[in-house]
Image (cartoon, rainbow, N blue to C red; front, side, top):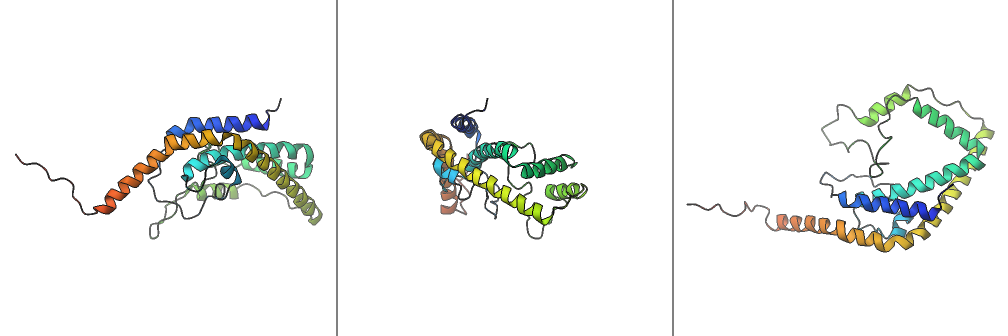
Length: 219
């Protein structure tokens, strides 16, 4: 029996709330490219996680919610969109044939993020995980080409799947309104104190950038 959308959203929020106490601010160099999954997400807006929330906090929730949308669209596609379903199955089979799949099986907090850090000018990488994955992908035969008629029919089914995804997303946004208070309470408890501590430390370092610290006492 399929779980209701209300139940799925509640369970996703519960899982995120269990993870949130383990979140710590990132101390590495920030990425240049914004996260396409989180930037401007209506799901995060409905959850009350605005742009002032750290990206790691946002990503952990948006990924769990997107999984609900993806699962609903997968069920809809299997039932109603045979051509798109066939293409997805062929692509899944091709993916399983790859010998190296570093982006699969990740925890929700890391799904969809770049698998390699941003390059540093003048310091090239000896290798990258993305490059190794591309090499493995190149060894797998490409899918057979489609006719123009098949491409047109496939584009129509893709548009129908997108419309259904938007419908599910709007329903999830409505459900999330009932979880905003506990989401925001958790952010106040576990996230804001860490952010405030970082800002306080940054303020101290800016006020006294050359301060060697308190003088040592002499006997």
